[in-house]
Length: 582
Image 1: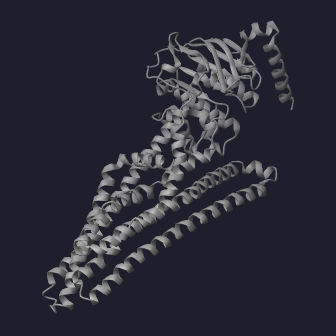
Image 2: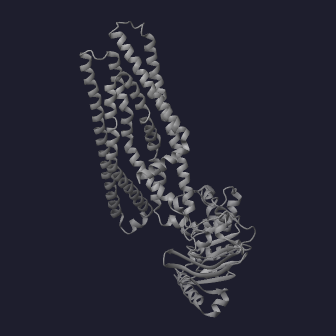
Image 3: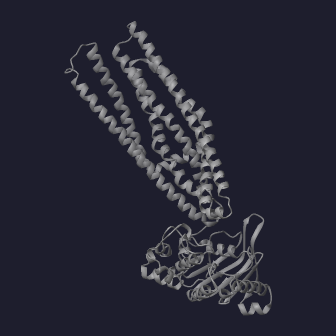
């Protein structure tokens, strides 16, 4: 599994191949500079100590040595910059790919996932890949090149030292692989604890009002504390493995260097080797192990990246529930027909059964039924959020919804859900989500149609008034009307409202129902509603019971039949009367 993720991460790095190649090339050049630097230093010391040369004699070598110091520093700095830029490029492309794939997966997938989990994956998870891309991958290439170059030089100078390096060099990667199996499991647990802690913390912050009201804040604090402590323990376990790995590898590297030095000492005493080659090899042996040490240092970063990448690729490998085509959406008014439509979220548990209905162009259709009857599921299928398990949805008689281009379909509709989403920012920015190029006059007109302009303009900053996440600072009714203002601003051919007049008092609801009727005129409108004021204006009413359409007709005809609709409206009118009395 780890190898598969490694290959996919390397494939992801190909998007910044030039930067990574530049980093490796500069690193290799720095390695060659080290060899030349060691040669110059060995020549200078030999000349000064054994040949009794003056500083003027070795002036050229000294100047070359200083120049190489500067060149090596510049090459190392350039390699870091190139690798960092390559990693940033890959991170940006991965985040864009994740976001695009989440849009393709749709709200049905997002509803089944914790938002903090997805946010941590997109932010912290992708960020954890930088050390892998910027350091580990270039270091892998340098391990395969720089030690071989140094080994070739050492082999020309002393075959015994070269043999020691050949024997001891592979020990470091071997131990890294052995320790890697343990480190991978620890890092995977660490990442899971981080996701869990992020999810718990976000849930606690979002539900802080409810927790305080029910006196459960301390319990949630204790729970987050336990999760954080588990995360701390597994993090420390990972660091222990990393430190022990470094200590073991440093021991073997130091042992190899000491062995070469001892052998050279004995051979120098017996005159079996000259000072220059011995000193030069001693200078090069630590540099032989330096790339291997660097790889060991960054091996922990690889384990962290693999743990994060596993979750990233889990999201990317999830197949979208809905398959879209590339056909253009028919122009003009839209007629939507459902034929034999069935829907199941879980196998064997149908939500919709054999739905046969039509939403004629230019008319308003209301969908009513008890909670859980399947109203929102029918709308979700029309929106393209979920895929039908059977049957089809066609547009204008002959074009299947599944054949349309996704963005083009969503651009032709305006949707107001039961719980609309507002974002931290100004009121104008939240309304302009429907049409980013709209000017202030258009925004004010949309707010006026949603019966919210007077309240907004009464605020000190007017349209520029800042609201918090999820509409903090606004009432439930104001949030609903702000979402309706988006629909007014978009002026789409298809209008879909899911309990759009919820959270409103009777007077505001009546005014807004009239505004919705004005908005729906000449458009295809689908409205899920319980309120009588909204339902009675519809040209067609669909009554859904247990995932099937039980009745179809107008408000007057359905009431006259005295069936399921009449019973449902009786309960609704009684509830509205009780609310007015209160």
